[in-house]
Each structure stands twice: as structure tokens, then as C-alpha cells.
Amino acid sequence: GEMQHSVNGVVSYVIRDEVEKYNRNGVNALQLDPALNRLFTAGRDSIIRIWSVNQHKQDPYIASMEHHTDWVNDIVLCCNGKTLISASSDTTVKVWNAHKGFCMSTLRTHKVKNIIYGTQITEGSLTSILLIFSVEGVVCIKCLEIVTRVVNRQSLLKYLFDLSMMVVAQCLSGSSDGTIRLWSLGQQRCIATYRVHDEGVWALQVNEAFTHVYSGGRDRKIYCTDLRNPDIRVLICEEKAPVLKMELDRSADPPPALWVATTKSSVNKWTLKGIHNFRASGDYDNDCTNPIPPLCTQPDQVIKGGASIIQCHILNDKRHILTKDTNNNVAYWDVLKACKVEDLGKVDFEEEIKKRFKMVYVPNWFSVDLKTGMLTITLDESDCFAAWVSAKDAGFSSPDGSDPKLNLGGLLLQALLEYWPRTHINPMDEEENEINHVNGEQENRVQKGNGYFQVPPHTPVIFGEAGGRTLFRLLCRDSGGETESMLLNETVPQWVIDITVDKNMPKFNKIPFYLQPHSSSGAKTLKKDRLSASDMLQVRKVMEHVYEKIINLDNESQTTSSSNNEKAGEQEKEEDIAVLAEEKIELLCQDQVLDPNMDLRTVKHFIWKSGGDLTLHYRQKST
Image 1 (spheres, one colour):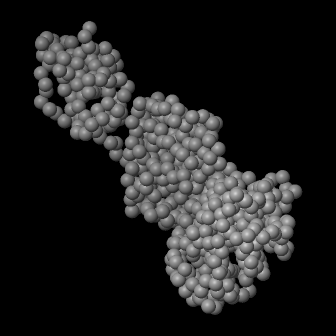
Image 2 (tube, one colour):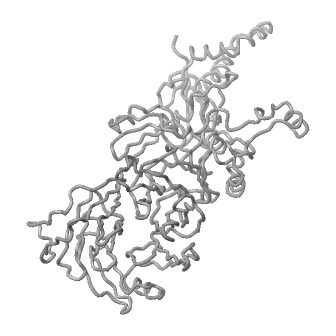
Image 3 (cartoon, helix red, strand yellow):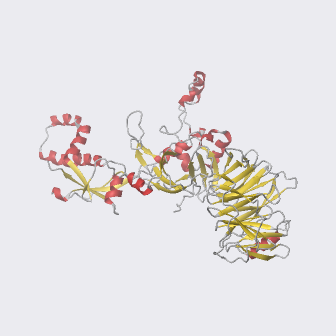
């Protein structure tokens, strides 16, 4: 479910490998640069990748262009392949140097579905953008935003006609009813309708001469139809998943091949050789008795994709996550250290969850999103600091042997911003600094991070508005950079500054409870005193309290103690009381005897399980 984020901004990070070579999710768009033999893919995993389509290359991967934080919905190559423009659901349009693969500028918009550049428009309800380029073709001069929601044909036509600068006289549109329509812009009307598919048409390509249309969509079939004689059409191939985008290889005429992207992560190239030995297929009437055999059964070339995470379960310790991906592989992750702990292979997901169940209650302190096919973890002010655990339970040891309480969200924020100079504590004041510089000792005096663990330095950290709009994305290790450091000053929300820069640890959570003698003990019920303690207090501490304050006092009032014994009694305190309490007393909740190691929040969550204040009963063990 969608979490209600506070107005004060959220922090997200992605758990991933430093180099993600393969598309980790479906591919929304393709662009081919025939001059350089390169293919650009726009991933639902937020990454634009560049591939070599030269078939002699063993490994086609060239590079990744990373800046977006959500699905990349469309890409357009322009200026003779020098510039790439991308539109994303993160509400930005970015302009890239396509040859070198870096982002030159960012335009903030709404969620952008496609970029219209040339002649293709599909009906849909997301904003489209029209880019106008200067005649010299050097750079995108202005980005004309057309925020009409192109929902029906009327508005589509008006929309096209208003763009009188469009040089084309006709255009094609694919529709959710499976038809393809040909429009005359001069006459402002639809001049032909082609019934080719049974389901939505999501992708179209047309040849240079505007005589043949290639279409694909939900039904996974790709057809080529002759626009002058629609009875002549050929089934080129059948994909393994719904078709999202196609790109004709226009290096020759007729086009020799077609690149196809689907909701799966692999991208296929299908040959079009031999397509012009078309045979008329008769009228199009879903005649299943005589289905058209596809021209190709195997793709000519495959750009292999990776697996996407499609299922996840946050374990009870609210620190580890189990996931399952599209290949049915299960993995075990550590949210705190932002890394994968192990691949468990093709095991039963539900079994694995049961196996790893621990009877411990930790409140929710983060949310998980799988939209990119990788784990994106989001921290929000409303609950980021809810989870305290003891260092020992978290697997951390303190140098002095104590077992401090750690706040998971607080530690994680400190680790994510560890390289940001503003978070570093320098224990010296100014004058001493100068002396230390001479001795060269100054460096190791600076305290960074949280003192317990680090996250991988390549981890992407994303600062966003509550509504999902990205303000700034950077890699953890880059926050030391001058520009990044300045941008962080502008974007890091105050609640994160409080903990990372000012080191103000959040408050413990308190839990109210009542303590009463168990009915079996025959003791009189006490007046109801409402007690309050940290929700991480262990049951044994309550047992010690009972032993000391209640049982002992009862015993003492019976035997008048001589003043001599008191001093000796004080020394036996701490350790002995703990041992004695455990020997002589048991604590119960809902008539269930409690494990002394359990903490109050776990008792409340797993045993009390009802509304109202937790009530605990004590009794002396029968010796």
C-alpha cells in the first residue's frame, strides 16, 4: 500500500550492485544509432543503457546512463545521434550527451509518458512532450510542453492540427481496441482503420515511404501490414511478453531488422529478410483454423536481461528482507547495511519466511518499493526513528563492552551521509587545529558515520518530496564533492539534519503497563499504579523490580532488620538480585509464563495482543 508520507521530504536508497549490466525490468523505449552501431534502452529499472549491436562482440554492454529514479518512459536520439533526451516517471526530462553518456541538463515537468519528435503519437492519458530543435541541430532550443491529455480521437486531432509546424501530412495511431488508424492532418480526420490485433496496440513503426506499418502490443504478436492493401499482412514473430516499443533498423531500405522491447528485460532483434514474399492472408477474421505461421521463430540477436524482484517480505526483525525474482530465485537482504546477504536459490518462499520467523517485535521504520525491479527503501520522518534495538541483538559490539540501545533509522541516515563533510565531528577547536595540522594528526580525529557499520559507497541516495518527485540523487560516496555538498545543503530535510549533523538522537518509546499479583498467589491486589518503561525493557528487569520493591519489602516488614545487616545487604545488590529474582519469581501475561529475555513490546505484540494497557502478573515460584 501507499504510505502516507509527511510533508517534510523523504530519503530513499537503492540496494544494488555497483554496475548493473543487465536491464533489471521491462524496457519502455529503444533508440538505434546505425552510424555507431549502438542501441539505447530505456529501462523500467530507471537506467538507460548503451549496447553494441555489432554481432561480433562477445559482450554487447557498453555503459549505463544513470540519473533517473523511476521508470524511463521514452528516449529520443537527435542532433545526428549526439544528444539523447529521456522522459521519466520521476517527473523529469533529461538531456544527455549520447556519445559520452553524461547528463547535461534536467527539465522538471510532470510525469512524462512520451516524447514526440517526428511522427508518432499513441492515444493515452499521460502527458506528452514535443521537442523543437534549432535548425542547426546543435541543442534542444525549447521544450514545448503540451499538457493536453490526449484521451480521445477528437482531442488527438485538434492536438495534432494545432501543431501547424508539423511537417507530416499524415500519422498513425494505435489504440486499446486493437485497431490502427491513419489520420490526415490536412482534413483533420481518420481516413483508414486497420483491424490487425485483438488487444491493445502499444507500439508502431512505419517505413520511410509510409507504405508499411509494423505493430505490436498486448497480444505479443508483431505484424507488418501494407497500408495500401491491408489484406496483405505478415506475422513477423510472437514475443514472450507484451510489446512496449519497437525500433526499425533503417540502415537500408527496405528495413533489414526490427528491435523489440517488452515487459520482460531482454531485448530482441528480429530479421525482416524475406518479408516481402508476402502472401495475401484474406480478410482478417480471427480464423483460428488457419493461423498465419510467423516469419521468424527465433530472434536474430538477443540483448540478455536480468531478473526483477517481484515479491518481498520484511522479516520480523524489521531489518532483513526475503525476496523472490522473476527466475524464482529467493534472496536474503540486510536493509540496515544496504546489501544482499545471500542468494538462497530456488527455495520455497513461504517456507523460508516461516523458517526465519523470530518471536521479536520491532516497529516498522521503512517502506519498500519494487517498481524498478530492485529494492528501493524509503525513510520518512513519521516512522523512521520508531525502531530501537540493543547493539547485541543487532550483532554489534561496543568497545567498552556495554550494550547500548541503537536506533536503526538514525544509524542508517548517518551511514548514508557519512561522506558529507557537514556531518563530520571535529573534536578540536580552532587554535588546536593548527597545531595538529603540523603533526599531521588531524585527519584521524574526525569522526565520520555512525561508528558501527557503513553502507556500500556506490549506494544511490535519493532526496525527494513527499509526493514522489525527486529533488536530488547522488551516490553515497559522492556527498564529499563540492557541488554535491552544496546541493545537499539545499535539499536535505531538517529532520535528517537533526540526526546526521546535530546528532540529536530521537527519544525512546515508552510503554505504559500495570503490575498485579497473580490470582493464584493469594496476595491482595495492589492499587492500580500505572507504570511506564522503555518498550525495550526486558521482562527480567520487571522481575527484579518485583523482587526488590514488592516481595523483599513484604519480607522485610515481617522481620525487623538490624541496622548492621543493611550495609552488607547493599553489596549483594545487582548480580544477586538478578539471580534471586529469576529463581523466585515468574511473570505472566494472559496466563502465559514469560521468558525473562523478552522485551515489553514483544510481550505486548505477541502475547497481550489486545487493546488497553498491558497488564503483567507476578507470583513466587513454588519451591
